Image (tube, helix red, strand yellow):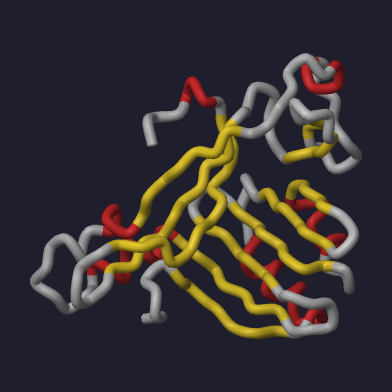
Length: 194
């Protein structure tokens, strides 16, 4: 098992080694979305436009589904990427197999704190209420301050769902956030309390 029970796979790779990792993660996942942070732009989309993001300007890529996330990140252009795959099924399997009598530590739900982040959306912006999309199929949005962006969301979605993975201090038992992953987007009214 990895240092953290939610990690399915991790390592360091050069840019030219990223496509096979992305392809392996993507597999047959139907609900795949991504956010890409480049040195010169932000980009988002769905599976069919993902490979176009693997360029020299990429600094961070989060490819996610409701169950797992691949994160590629580097701090400077020209460096290798650190990557990890966080997977809820791996978390459950790993904590259930822990050799401990502490039932708290054997419950996967005690390692996840779900949060919802409200998106800054000006719903008076005409492309938004008309449901206009960009070339990648992302909904065109405008912030309340006037900034424009596009996200891989459905009309009406107004929150980002984030899972925070918790670690516990072995001496004190105090919990802290060790990792986060994107789960998806949804309507606030449909969201259960977080």
